[in-house]
Length: 414
Image (cartoon, rainbow, N blue to C red; front, side, top):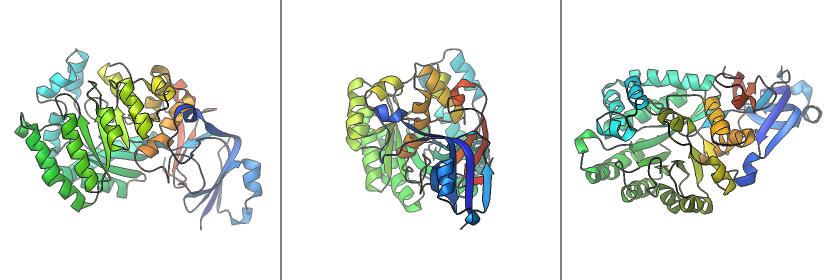
């Protein structure tokens, strides 16, 4: 067994009680001002005050001692909602949005998601992998050690399977954990325009069985929104996915209060994401069902929309997670530090609540909390060192990354 001792660190970690941290518990952080982390074969074996950990450790059995020199140590970020598997950027579309063209109009003109569908369908698998790999590497440098990546720029069976193969390869060849999500119902493709129900038939009758056979995806997601997929269509897809053994998640109530949050609650989904327009009643249903709210402040920033009501959600007892929503249209960022800064400044979350949202609660949203999301014995030694006295530096030092080191399973990867 390879043993490592990371000493002289200011350790900040969410408290994992076996469920997502909600309400007042979201701001609870375990702190060791002069802490140490003991790692064996990539897993945490002890954590706490440095003198106590050293007293419990046979120093002769330690292969490596790393002096963290008083830097802040936090868990590696978990990014639970990305569309990072794509090829071409959409800068011209950004210009249109900045000039005031609504996103749904851009989508109706064949832009938005449909523009990326065209380029991803035409891309070779190797080209798609290489373009996605560069973005995943950037996310890693910015502290993300576990990431969810969705398909959804295929909208046909062959391309969706191609995307999932690329996503799976990213997880095998890059030094971070990747959780693949099938998002075949991301938009209605051009060839099914005005025939959304027929496309749902394809997703349910052909895509999901093929996805199950391929065996790569862990979750199924649906973009449930006015002009995209209705509540009934989303329910049909997600129920079929669950029958096929996939976990379910949902893009819910981003533009209109369509009832996606209520559907997530009724299905017991792992998460409902976006939620800018979700009603109080439907958010309460999520609380009662134990569904995690994944909020995407960089999307609101990019689309110039009001931010999701994070403060209200937390005060109402809802577990809140944060994600980048990295995609080529509405949120082109791989940076969890940027997202955390937006959450603190514009969504009125405390720095500790935002830390929990970007680590532990994010891990619960993608079924990874048993192994990542907090610095606890038995979990992977995925952690970051920050140039600051506390996690507050993530929001306070705006526009830069305060991350000086990224560790995955005890190995320094940046």
